[in-house]
Length: 393
Image (cartoon, one colour):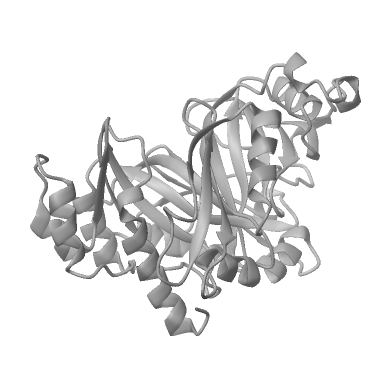
């Protein structure tokens, strides 16, 4: 993420592009090491009204609003709010000019995640490796400093208008970026939610594009294919999709979906049409206590997809031998699944925005490394019920 500065408060800024050129090794990405990622740094949301959307995430999801950047802090063309909870960091940005990149992006795609920012030890090395291995640069290597710390970033393009920014930080704990000051937006009170970390971020791409993006992440970032789900595994009576989970072997997990043939319009195709192209479909956030988190989220006004009571008859059979709070799970609509490593519990919100695009997942992992394959049918039937209500199925 880059912060625009102006006036006396502007930090020192230097711009330098990496000397590594893609055409040095065309056809030979294996000769250059893949970018070394530490994990997710933050997600930046581009929205129509940053103050309102930041307030929504604070009041409904329990985030603390810890910082603000805008005209009052020397940032002339945007208003950005910094939100944190556990190890999750969100930046919510709104454009102050309808002709700005944020304004154009929001007009085309609606509110959503634009930047999946990744922490690295060296942004110069990361952008050099990624570009040499085939990535398209979206923003040059940039260094920004203020009296507290230094931020070094560079960005590459990915599906649709989504980007990945490599973020290298040198500053005290809690410091985010030049131009951010403590926020005056009051965080609404409420019961603690307990969201701890970003588990994974899912993207939707157009039909026929999945294999290309799987190859892209493998070649450019050195990611491996963790698991693939075909249209026989992810289907209902009416719709289906395909999905491949890509990961760096550590904490960065990026599943990618595409629509598949079905009798009716799939949820992925509905997304593509309303988002006007590929983009981030949902953000999964991990918690250590999903029952308490879901209770708190419901009390705060978060709406979740509904699960029919019959789901739990089958779930009890699948989860035999595991002690679970079945009454609470059924009361709250929490889904369960297992694999050889353990089990997981998960629940999905309704879409968060006016357009039927982005939503959130809350997940608790107890050793399980999967993604709830046993819940796919129940989940997609719940999504189809919402599609039918919107007249889009």
